[in-house]
Image (cartoon, rainbow, N blue to C red):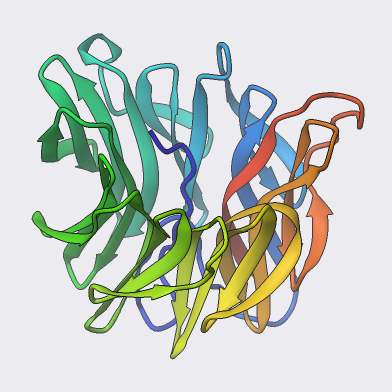
Length: 317
């Protein structure tokens, strides 16, 4: 199941996405990143790390991030329990005795907390979402499934992910199939009447606008997160081993690694993910502002480290 989620919440145009926010420009800014640091589930605020939970055998992750006023929300899973954190307080969403579950993406709308995820049961695998802790099942399958993305717009709830090798999304419980060849949806955004989904098709980074697919790269690649601002479409991902982002289809290469999420603050473009040191087995959690990297965790360079940023939110002052 996918453990990286990278998605958006509200933009200035009152469009809601999951996981990251486009904030206003000007003045100073606080940069929040949710991610994984060598077995710990963490949030960084301006590089200062707060540990939310510690995993056993690395089984856990935090995948989504949203800020509503002064409240910081993070979604993820610890062991077999889907959960979210509000200001550091863990709130379970699933019963581990009923089967392993993962919370992936999160969005806040009108004070309500929406979270997409997936759950194993004794009769199959489910894609689900929770609204204020109440679960809705979208599908039951004998194949591997993952509910990777969520967006809320105009009272409508959109959830995206995959069933087996098929990329899908739901709008108010009605399923749309996007692709059926090693395909997945990793992020969603809604702008007016346009529903955007990003992910991969046949191991290539793609996005869909109302079901019409556009290929971003012909190399081994994937698209992980999306933000729409006005007529501009920003997508974070990986292209042939490099962290990249695309603006309206034009690629900017960052460095070896992967970009998992993207957001804006004024004219500044922020991405998060990891930078990979070739040959060392080490990945370093980082965010990039207009292509300039800031490291978030400081493992020794000779250590085989696993670190990554999965979601980003920027609050301007």
